[in-house]
Length: 364
Image (tube, rainbow, N blue to C red; front, side, top):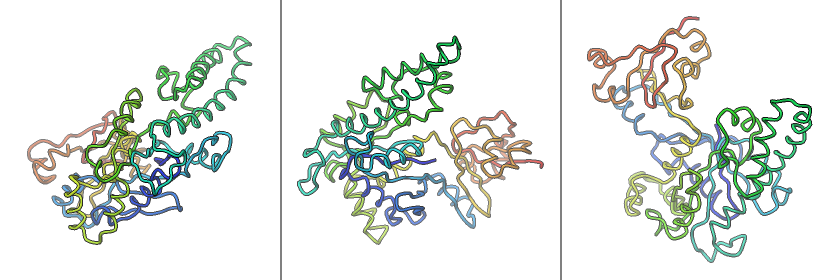
């Protein structure tokens, strides 16, 4: 699962990406690796994993990960191929969610591509380019569907109605994710077309150090404008976060954060939010060999969760032994959980809860 960082040039995208890429920014077990110059795999910071490590004392600990993509800065006309438009739109189409960075700070030394700081205008610039690209997709599909609808094909007529609704919304400047379509219609006609503006979005307001905890007037405007989108807004002083990553000593970094009034690096908050944005959750396996966080979609069943470890686990699934994370921590060990009668035995229909500690029985 990939989340793409987007924004206009000079809003702090690459600084943020580089900040995430510096392992020193977080505790020692928060590495990052670069697959390509603009793609990195970041571990998802999870205090529960550390707690399980303390209780089980395993040989190794493996956290959940999320893939972050730094996408080239977009400019007006990208939908027509301006700047790196085609590359930008191709890269963003391959991601599962969007992290949209907005410049919410004044700095005369950093030139704004449009000459002044206005995060709402910047957001609209990107929204319009993405909507225009989605409009192209709708029009192409409509050409085919209309021909079939004219022959009296009921399915094609239904699809045409949905596509016309999307076309009308996009032409009015509304992103696909904000256009009301039934769940069935979305699955049948919207999802297969992979609209860029249908992807879930998280807004990162890049502020200066003084606004890192409470934001500023720019942030307030952004929150007001995106309220209808049901999107999360995160405040991040990206340049300051980059300064923190330069500090060699973990204790020094913690003191720096305390001085700013922050409990943890903003990058940690961002990564967890991206993970949630991708509709992912975590379950754990905990043994002396390893304590590991496994990533599954929210709503996954026990066999599907087992399949993440190995396809054979899903095919030959018999049952799952489940301990709620809170019970594991409360009783302190698997043995004590069993003694207390708190270990659940679950079948194929069990929906895995976030934080479940699981053991699978299977037969191949």
